[in-house]
Length: 224
Image (cartoon, rainbow, N blue to C red; front, top):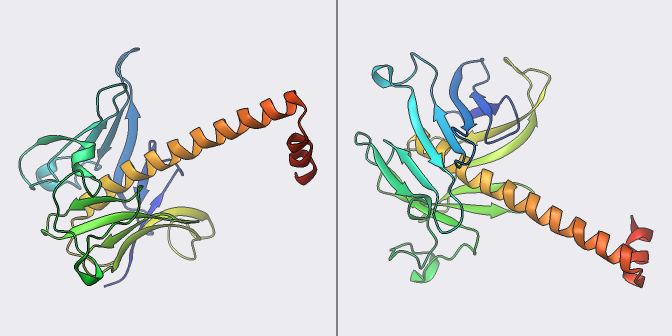
């Protein structure tokens, strides 16, 4: 089986459409805020006619602030029943839950502080692991086989031919595609939030250094 590529019409994990190379729409993604003081909700759906029995709903993630943790609502956890769980329980860290995740040598497989783990619909364990210059890559915990990764590429055929598009490349797997897409959108949204926050922090530090007139500010300016 060939690698599946889901192209993002917009390079934005909160507002986009995921399409295959032939132009078929697989997922629609939007973030809504029902009321002025409500928290935004990420809504993931299929276009009419694509879902099983006409069901277009895939999942929704309600981003909460303060002491409240974000929650995800979906059928993807057992395939039938609508379940609501906290995102931190769906995509968890080693140590938060007792887990039999094992790596080489029988030791617990720690992928780093930003790595998140989950149990797939196939009862196998997977991890979203950050890779520098790429983003989050999905690996099978036991075999370390790569399942999915984000790619920025020039499309050579199909609906997006000649365009440079951001896509999620998915290898043949027993893991449900809905689970891959939902978990990736959560991880990617959070990653971009952290990058934006860090960028703003560094910008403020640069402004403070320039205002104080220190030698490090002059050096920074000389290197730019």
